[in-house]
Image (cartoon, rainbow over all chains, first blue to last red; front, side):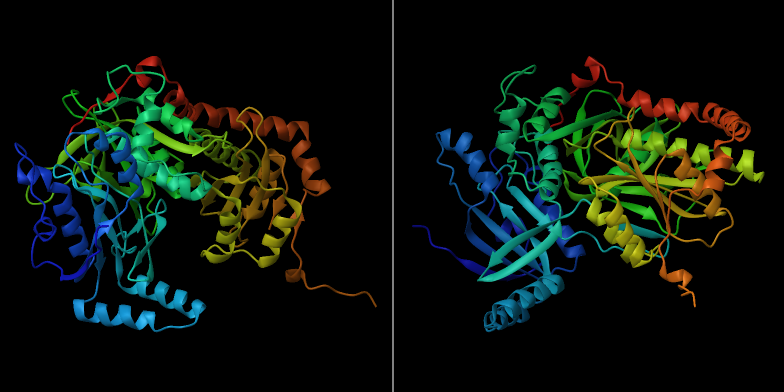
Length: 505
Length: 70
């Protein structure tokens, strides 16, 4: 029976690869084999890591399955266990004392509470280190960057999930999105990107886990256009969609031809807490790549972005994305640019250590969604534009007021989360409105929201049933959050009439 | 004595009162709104077309091979 060894280390004294005793395999340069682990170390340093704990023997479900279908059949006896590193934002001595103090708590409820407070304060996440010298970084969950960037920018990690971990009898938890590097045996970038995106879908739906091995096997179940599945000969978009479908989700695929629309889809999907997979093309057109979006950086307060002289798209606030790139590391900041010549969305990833920026063109967006969500984010976007048109038409023909720039945004959310947001955000409504909404409407599991706002209009939400289709749209209601601006009342009435649904205010 | 309820204590779930409904259902008003709507739809047609074209996929889209190595 292997012996467990738990060692405390000060962070930053030595390179992580050296602390773990990792050596690159023959013919692979050290900087190539250890690029991701170096990035993980740098990122943990930016989060304020001061100490780390290394567990010498850890069974990781994802690696176990990779081992079972692939590595166990090699001549070289790869172990089936990994190492795991935990990162803490407190020095070694205090960490040790704090962990012991937690075990002194005798009441179960107090213990859980103390563990949660400890995690919130000190725990930065963990990284599983696989016994594969050429690609050691396995499942890695690190805390996201802090929310407020500066006075005008905020970071949003709506796609993050909660991950539990146990160390020395203490229950730890971290909020982030899992990352791992490709091993080119079981998985390449397409598999790894899907694996990260499905983490979030799994948290929302409580479905079974999707390991890299399962994703590759299911993707290549019915078609092998590019050869053998393992070692991975890469996947096609068709195979990626097959894999998503086989896990019980609906693969929503969009072509990214238009900058404004692509940016809008990205903004809506991250706002909806759905992690999209981006399909990227190298500028020369010779390589395609897949990455997962973990979060975004947006302008706050809002800055107008006109996609038509009188239509302001809130998605214009999107400045950067945070992506998981399995070749480089987690939470990479990716700048968003417009390619002037072809109006496409360009992603620029500034690399660290003085390397030049990488440029990619976005070609497709793949979004794994709950299969009962029939309205796509594209349909919702179209609905948003139509709704703004109706508001303009009403102002022009009945209110006889001059044109007023109207902004809109759309997203899909769990119904209970929407109701909760009505009470806890700055545009809060009276508790009685929430009560009335609950009593008089039948909510689907996911509700589509189109929010409209203007100088003469307080925020108005149109709620739509996501199980309906665009042709047979079921509008649930209009929620008027306030009545402080001149035309709110009349526009709310008109839209309720136009959408054939009740108005809540 | 008639009991007076505080206005703020009541939630109004409006199912459009008759006057508003009548006004909006008036054919002349309806026509005016429809005309304005048509004008706005024309203005936003490129935006709608961009949305629709992104979801009109062909075999070529699905055949894209993701082939970047680390």
